[in-house]
Image (cartoon, rainbow, N blue to C red; front, side, top):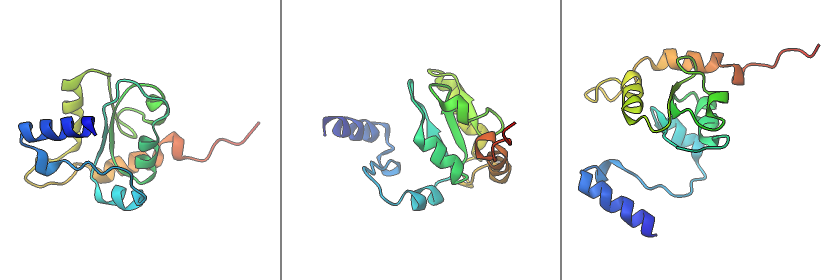
Amino acid sequence: HDLRRTCATQMGELGIADRVIFAGYRSDMQAVYNSVDLVVQSSSTEGMPNVILEALLMRVPVVATDVGGTAEIVEDGRSGRLVRSGDQEGLVRAVREVVVPQVTGRVADHGELVARVVEAPILQDPPPSA
């Protein structure tokens, strides 16, 4: 609970507490993915990120750091955007490339990104065995 309290305090100090949800465990992830415009994963280390797999399968655009297995499932510029770990400016730039200005509250080129996700090799049938 200390980490949650620390994060909640920081969100208050940044003036964004009304825009951050600490959701905890969720059993309704399909509804969650259906309600979001973008998934951002900014990990410095990662194994095989389930959240990225889930987002791609639910056709939600992804901006992620190029760590662990992320590059195996996200092809930069095709099925999402990849940014070098620790590159905060690059992460912000990639999010801005995907998101339309806040005034509209819509994701830019969402249809194009979804089309890229559908074409992503991870979602295609594997080639026939030789």
